[in-house]
Image 1 (tube, rainbow, N blue to C red):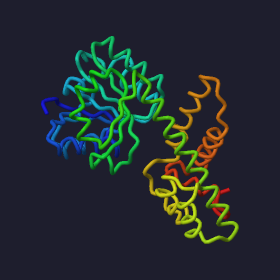
Image 2: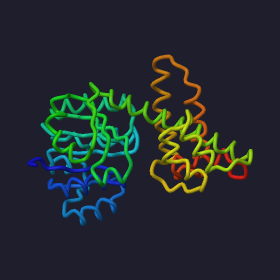
Image 3: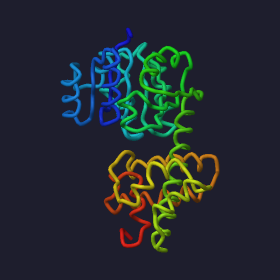
Length: 294
């Protein structure tokens, strides 16, 4: 456990990952967030620094995890002129966990390489509670030697890992995961919404779904919430729109038309336009049950 660790982006996922590694005995030396009060509060909790500059984060640790929201944020922390994470970054290892486009991961990989640093993708297919408990599922890409070097750290954070290939490849698979998940969620919302409009008992319908070809992981995690209108956020509608959009961009780049994905993007974008983007992805049922949102 000799490597020192820092985090950039300490919202709910990043903060819980930092807490997990601290509890496992790692030295978490610095945390940073664009919303500084969040970083200051977490730094006080963990007993570490909360630098005001990104270059200071790089100087404070050997391994830096980043958990940011989108491509623009990735460009800002790695590629912006002036202060960025790649200043004096030789031999540092950056583990980038956000769901962003494969293209930005490849850009960051090349920029890190030019700076004498290393960039590894660690795409997550898990929830906030999994981050806290060290039960993440990680899809990794970059240089396999770098992956093996940080594997002891990753093992403390996850129950399963899959090394997929070169830069951008884990991001591609993560986009596929979220695309299929979001399509399944939209389909379940339509099925339950139609069942309700026809006057069926929804507990019965969900039980039938669970024993037939309509079964899915989404039925288990989101079906009850759709019926009860309980949409506390684990994975937001806004993020669903973004991630399905990444998959749509990938499809366009190889000349594929994916109508189900396009329809799903449209539904989640509609949620955002109605001010429902902060709801969990299960909130898409608000668009499909009669008497809720149009």
